[in-house]
Image 1: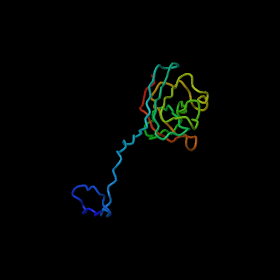
Image 2: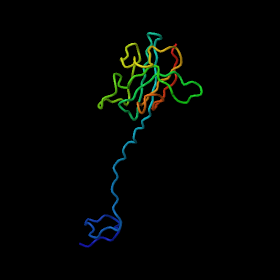
Image 3: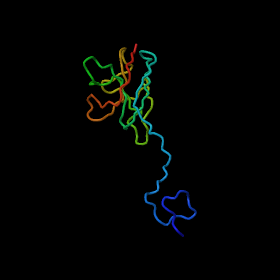
Image 4: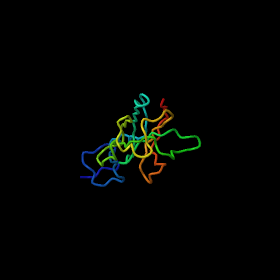
Length: 161
């Protein structure tokens, strides 16, 4: 068989015996979908007041750790730029305790009401909280116990009547 001239004008019935001058392009695979971006958020919803106060907090955490928690803080006083004080009340993102290795706390809901776990009774925490300006904060339990803690995301302010 005689090789075809390089390059051929039209395909030949007989394959070329001489390698081509440049490599043959490999067909591309269909592009995959763009990666989904994760944006941490925290939002609060409040019902009732006084002893009947319920605060529901929804959150998304893009890099969850087993010891992440949500605190309800008084709004930051003028002159401060971070929460350098303890929250009024707090809950682990897995509610009853630090999350087990197989528990997913990348997003969820915690509810502050009159039926809180016993660990919330220790320290400077109390519930129901007094009337005033508050904010929910998703924190990481890194470092020392005294505040400020490592903040993941801060929610919007809300007022307890």
